[in-house]
Length: 214
Ligand code: B16
Ligand code: MG
Image 1 (cartoon, rainbow, N blue to C red):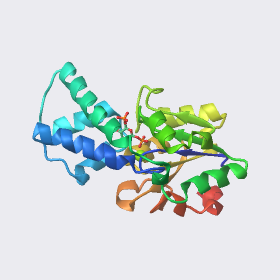
Image 2 (image 1 turned 45 degrees about the vertical axis):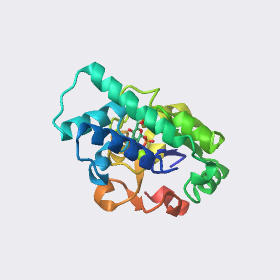
Image 3 (image 1 turned 30 degrees about the horizontal axis):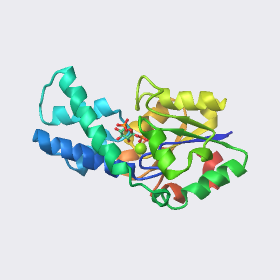
């Protein structure tokens, strides 16, 4: 029986994915790498360093570890700059209500984001209190598609993987949920998220009555 829901952050609760994209695109432009929304799909849900590696491999660019760290820092500074103006009304419509309804049914709610900036984003949006536990990129060794982040979230909730459902917008995130032995609701397109058990266009479109039938 499903007793907990684990939410990804970027692309599921709020569109920080857009801010990641424009920061990576700015860096790619400086490096002379062609980088569009299409290539950006591969970056969703994966760590900052892995994202940089993908961009460098697109441009067939080889750099030292120090140079990579400097570029990753630069991208992060831009991202942090972009999100400063975020307001609570940027939370996707209906998401707060969904979180409240889940908890009112006695189920647990966790947040599991690969982002090391998740705490800043949740604070800017003023929604930290909506979660029973928060797991972010600072607490894990392997980012999605590795199942570590979801297993840690379930563990902190005192739940078995089979009792959890994950909401994810990234291919790497869906793969991580499946690898964790959890059911997954994909937020986005069937083409990208075909391995999810159920797909919705928007997070709040999910009908909780379907939860036990996934
Ligand atoms: P940061 P999620 C992920 O967050 C993003 O989808 C991904 O694009 C980003 O590279 C990653 O966080 C790391 O973010 O650079 O802020 O540590 O989708 O797992 O909430
Ligand atoms: Mg995401």
